[in-house]
Length: 289
Image (cartoon, helix red, strand yellow):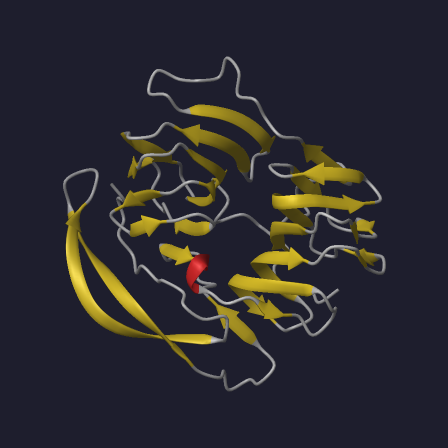
């Protein structure tokens, strides 16, 4: 179970959002304590600062975002590019952000750099740039200061991308590194879960996992929390239904591991997980380069 219950937010709009509480429930934590869970309803508003966008950006709050309920919105900076904003803190041009981005086929873009770093997971199609071609299930990290020239082919491409969420403390991280699709051979645990570890540092760890169908088990949430993104399949938890391409933030501000109970349906589930990072000294919006 989720041990330190915080507000659960479900996004239904790509606009700048504010919250109005609909009801409060109680639930039991992993150590038997009782906590309050506030279910919220999203309403669309404008921030008084005008150009500043703040969406689901409080890292201390548990959140389930079903992107299937968010419309694709074309970007103002490039044609043939559409996005679903998951979390964002910043302006239209520069922001700490987690976003699903869809690129139409046969698109070319100018070279650009990543002042705050970039990491992404290919959800569909093939991503192409100076570093190579990366099919579905590829995970790519382009460190702070790196640059590339994207060129999308006939397949088109959809990615989950995280911007300005790297740290200058990770000085040993290379400019670019990629992990290809995984077979998970020989990596299946007794509960049927298979894991392939990806990037790891003292500030964060990432991995991909496959979960068996028709199963129920606990996912370990380390100190400083985790994010879970559903690439294929779906599962349920006490937060609700996590359908395909849903995103979940699970804080853990305690010193011990927590447990997050999940139940899968009739199909296996493929997830990308990022762990131990919610207190990381990331670039964020401290600079606007």
